[in-house]
Length: 438
Image (cartoon, rainbow, N blue to C red; front, side, top):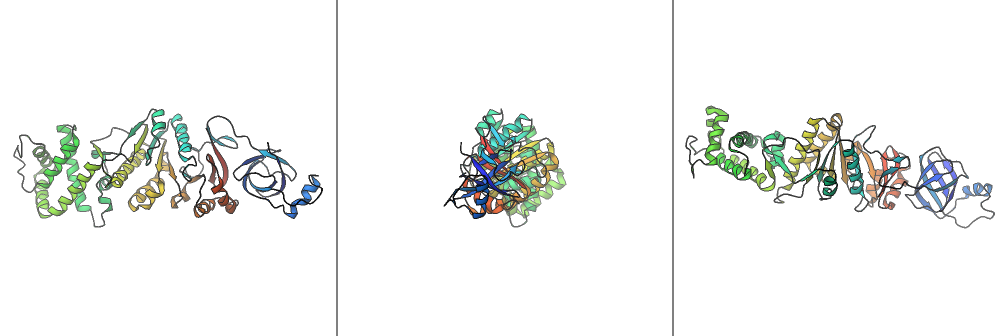
């Protein structure tokens, strides 16, 4: 095993004689832990006296490898003190120099950003955190953009599901999101009113008619809504005996009352284009998502595969509504929970989803909900999270992450692109090396 010697210690910067790769963790004879951040082949003159006093050299050398390290544990080592590579624990888990790392605990922000290039071990790290969370009895929800978490969710006895829209439990914001109206630049409020009338009546109708073959029934309901101006709600047959559409119109009348129902008929006749647009948005929802009447509760362990939709045209709207519903439900439950959000920067780049995410991240802490934001690059959201950074090859991204570490940000920025798979640094003011051990 290669050994080295401490040449100089300045605050938390430790200079070591020895050729150690950036990212390596060293342990001194006194128990100090040193994270190597850079190395070079030139020996500075100021180190020579220390080496002579330690009787390690007699003549002035031409070139000797030296390493610069950050003190990450213990007391600063003295010049002349021997160091050697730290032996990480054997077994499976997430480890810091002090032992198994508990990334579920926090002192400031509950939220965690896991950032690194492809192949750094981000998904493996997050899966290990999920195992820890499930062992503690936390609720676990994964918004999976890459279909990567099915194995761990099933291992934990959980459920893997496509995006589900519980029609009769949606808030106004979620209904706007699910139908795409949240993105409409002109005011969607009037169309939203029609949709709310429609969904309330549809949910009542489904209670009476049953929610088997919901997609077909909802489509019939949408057709009935569009035909309100010419339908006599007292007839029992439109195109066939006891038709679903006729039943829906009758229920809509009962739910709204004659005055409101007749007013709605007049509005539909007067604003047929708006009404048609509202129903068009709703039929997009029916074409892209699995719609259910309601969900009694979220499964304790759940992965929502955001790629499993019927069409790609309105996927983002379905994803947005699903995400919003999940966030609201977790907050209302007030139970210890972990929610994983893959491709966080993409969500933040979208104005509609950013509003929902920002509100959730601000509120979640008060309700025992922790978000794990996973991405290949940082964004504005990292300022309010703890950071676990793996290899980041983009130099500007590396500098942005390193700026959150007060100790040697320049050296940390140079270190990040040199990390290997499974090597991470945990940044929460202080810098702590983290290893994923399989």
